[in-house]
Image (cartoon, rainbow, N blue to C red; front, side, top):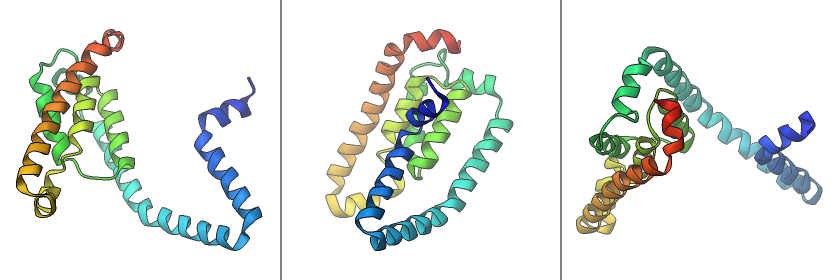
Length: 172
């Protein structure tokens, strides 16, 4: 397989978007120029956030002891760790492009898959957003949804820990 084909398969989203822009340029050059201008504006508005997030992740990677982190969130940690992970997920704020690299760094530091899944699932709660949710949907709805999400986060973490047995041996 050629190097170009490997790159295309790895970066399929980039290739598809570039193809769409070529098609749009043929169909409507003026609208394509507007789209490119808007895209650049959005990129510039989030670039400072992205640089900050990746800088913080770099510090985390260097300053946090991987063995200690792995002991607390790894395969030998108990079920209570999933509850802590779910709690962490509820206070975690930020866009996807910040959360996924953070979770990847956690994984590289020894966090087990169940912990990653519990954080991602509980991320749907967003404690700082609860007052807004209560205002529009009511406190009963908010309470039940939040509690079910936490229970689901721990449950899904347990399921993932069971399903990802083959991964367990490589991180112990």
